[in-house]
Length: 295
Image (cartoon, rainbow, N blue to C red):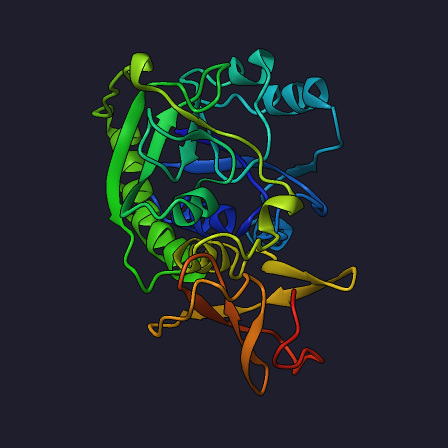
């Protein structure tokens, strides 16, 4: 079976390496990017192609016609699209005989759309999923091939949740690729009446508002941990990156306004939040804020 591959992030790297080990499956070609300004987890996978003598194309912006022409030259049975930042055109989807298999780390049909790992943590979900599906012209709306639930624990942040999802996805991918080769793969239509969508995250979504609860701020900080760029707090028109947070179990008077620095230890600041709460926020370096100041 001849397969194409499309991707440009760290999960793409892992998926391509997994697929190269599937008996009966030949990765005939790859489409990737030279760089990306929209993917925090961008990964250059050209070296995998070069080591394995796989022809590849560096896609240019708004060049799906050229991509379709390129893929059409390889007589592909299937294409895997893992880690791509926009929808594929119908012409690209129609190139392989059996279609294009996509991936979305959420419990489809719920939570289609953008930034699923970040939103799952920001919103305090207790579970997400690792889902492969047959792509159509919609956003994450095609028939499901494999879906495995992924628990989100209180101690998880984006780094640990990303790894959980990545580990599960490689096991799923190896099995479904083998099922493709043997002709035993099956699909399950999504219940579109149950579909929900997450929007694209902006930098503004990562700015801490101390009128939020301590728990909500903690969820925001852990959601934007590596490979993502980190939550931020603003002070004197400067943005200060927050690397991690720890909830304070001590209660403080309600009449202390949110954003007041209550204590300081090295690069850690204890800051008042809504109600009686407070949270420790840790920055990359010791900052200039002092106890009693406001953010």
